[in-house]
Each structure stands twice: as structure tokens, then as C-alpha cells.
Length: 569
Image (cartoon, rainbow, N blue to C red; front, top):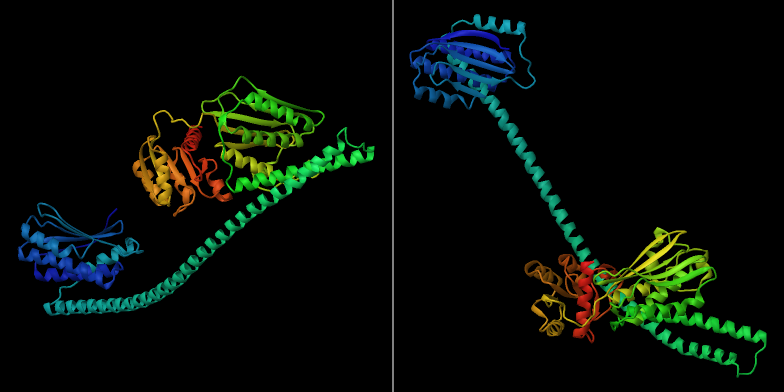
């Protein structure tokens, strides 16, 4: 809804001055500041001047609607030329929020938004503004000139005040900039100092890592040496106890026979612990080199049943189940026998009633699954990851009565990894556990159908790359070489090979850093040093590991077959 504030007529130069004064007074009454008052007055006087030049007249209507002050010049009747209208628009548009002139140049509308927070005038204020416009008297040219001078002076003062404010703000901004520069300089110095500390920390970590690797190697050498040294006297003790109890030896009293039996039992237990230590030392020294050959699973399970029958507690059924004839497994039978004996032996030790079973699952192309299941005490969820760590033993009454080092499962996991397989655990406390071994079943030493395709060989040692390339001669359609992890990632992205042979440790993060870029591709990790625990954890489920020492084409093809089976699972 529009509220009219007044009308006046423009037809002469005196009318222009009167309209200028009226608009200025109305703007002041509506709360506009001096600058906006002058802008409105100048806009109205500019259009009035053009009308006087065109010898035309118009009615000026001032109204307020929806926070807008509008000044309409009506009844112009197209007196202005197009050039005059364009000049008026160009002169007044910078002063107001909106200036409109109809195409026939009959009406001109000037619009200025009311000051922020200023309410629309009510009936009383509107009436007072109308009375002030009606009560205006014509002024003389001298009075008009004086008014314009006053307006100019007010504008100059306002401009000066704004200029002073701008100077003050510039000074504050300059001071702020100096503070920011000083802060930036301080932060830069602190960052540089932090970077030096990080570099020093990385150097220290590298040194500590080297020390840890040396300590681990020393530990492995110590375990191997001590184990070898202990085995000889233990075998002698066992042999002597056996001789003492043979029928053709001098008869022993019942008490002596019991003492010799206890010595023999203790020696057997100690020999088992020493063998565990020796197996661990071999695994950590990466001397577990599988020798694959066709495995008679039925015969292997029969030997396992005969070996563990004496260890089966009363009230526990021990079964080895082969659902159907199975002749498709090619792996190292000795290492596989160690795995099954260890897992089944553990199951028997922690099962007081029920059943322990070693079962060969239904054949799956490329994979053989063996499950060792028991109805024993089970393993709580919080311990299921820890049981594969060295020297860890699950707390419980059965564990307290059982001798052992906690090395068995750690060694089993390493052996399964060396065979190119995986070891997983499912267990419920009070209901039992199932350890699942999955192994690739194919025959090694043969070229896969279609050859190996394009092979990525990544190693920082040029000689090692040459050896691997020679082993691939006639098997691959092309070899792409990289000398560090970044180069291997780039080659995997650009060439997308069919197979990758990665050095365990090379600049840029080693094989573990490249594996994410090779998702879905078969990968074989080659190394001259065994992986540490962290490296083993990162690559165990992703790629088989082979030693560079004595690597043959048959070993390499066996590893490739293992890698391909892991990808297809």
C-alpha cells in the first residue's frame, strides 16, 4: 500500500529549486543522512532542469510504499527527446537505487530505499510532511544558491569525515598487516624448527629400526644356536633312558623305573620346546623354503591319526575325515604335517570332553581347505588375535596345567604363509574352536594357461631385476621394471600388468606401499631378508613371499600359482 507524501509542480527554474528543497526536506523527515538527502535533491533537480530546457511541465508526486521512497514525474507527455532521457538516466542512476523512464518518456520514476531500521511513516507523519511541502514558499535565486552552497559544504564535511575514517581504517589495516607478518614469520620459524625435529625423529626412528632388526636377527641366531646345542644332549638323555628300560638291560626296581620314566617324559617335553624354538628361529630367518610335491591327503591324515592317538585324552574322540578321494593338492607335505600336528595337538590339549576332528573340505577349484575343529574351552574374542603372537598364552585353568612356550600358533601361521595359504580362527568360549587352513592346490613348476602376460618387476637392485627378468624369459609377453615403490605404483597405473614381482624392502615404502595399487592382481614378494612382524602383517594375506636366494623358475611359478589362487578366492 502506497502513502502519498505530497505533490508539487515543475514548470520553471524556480519550480526546480522548490522541488529540490521539498525533496530534501522530505528526505530529512524520513531519516536519510545528509549524503542521501543531497543525492535525492540532485536527482530531482537534474530531471527538472531537463524539463525546463525542453519547455515542458510535470507533476512531482512523492510517496512511500514497502520501505521505498518513490518520486514520480508524471504528465511529461513525451516532451523529452531520447537523448535528453538517456542523459538524465546516466546522471541519476548512480545516485539512487532505481531510475526508470517509460519508452514513450511520459513518466519518470526515481526510487530510493528507506534507511535501514527506519519505519514507514504513519498517517500523522505523512500528514506533517504533506503540510511542510504545501507550506514551502518560493525562494530567490540567491537563497537557492545559498542552499546549494550549504548542501555542498555538508557534503564536503561528510566526505571529509569518511576520508578521515578511511585513513584510520587504513592505519589499522597496516598495523594488522604488520602483526600478521610478524606472526607469519614466527610461525615460519617454528615450522622450520618443527621440521628439523621431525627429520631428526625420522632419522632416530630409522636408527632404532635398524637396531631392532639387528636385535631380532641376533635373537633368531641365538635361538637357532641354543636350540641346536640343546638338541644333542637331549637326544642323548632320551636314548639313555630308553636303554635303561630295555629288557636286556640290568633290571630296575619299580621306583627306579618310575624315575627313569619321569626323566624320559621331562626330556620329551623339553625336546618339544626346543623344537618349537628352532622352528621359530628358522621361520624368522626366512629359511622355510617349501618343496612342493603331490600330497596323499589320506596317507597324511592316517599318519596324523596314529601320531596323536596316544595324546588323546580319555572321553575325547579324535577323527581325521576325508569326505572323498582327494588327489589334487601339491604342497610341502612335511610343513603341512607340522601345521596339522600343531593345530590338532593344541585342540586335544584344550578339550576335556567331546570331539576333535581334522576335516578336508569339499574341493573348490584352486583351493584346498582343512579345518581343525574341537569342542574344547574355546577362545574369547579379545584373545583371538593375540594367540598368533609369539609367547602369548590364553589365561585359563587348562593353560596353567599345560607346559608350553606359546610359540606354536605363531610358527604355524608363518608356515602356512610360506606355503602360500591363509590361517583363520573361529571360536566361541565354552563351545570350541575351528582353525581353517586354506592352501592353493595346483601343481607348481608349470606355466599357467596363456603364459604370465606383462610382468612388473620392482627392485632397487639392478642385478636382482636382471635375475628375475631372466627367470621370466619365455614365460611373459613383456617385463616392466621399477627401482622404487613410487615407480612401481606409476608403472602399475600406466601399464596395468598381469603379474607383479615386488622387492620386500625398496625405497619409498617397499612392497607394502605398492600392494594397494595392485588390487586384484597376483603379486609375489621376493626378499633377501625375512619380513618383520609389521611387514608380515601387511603382506601376509596379500602375496606369497619367496627368498631371492636360490630362487628357481619352478619356485617362481609355484609362487605365481599361489598368488593367482589368492586373487581368485
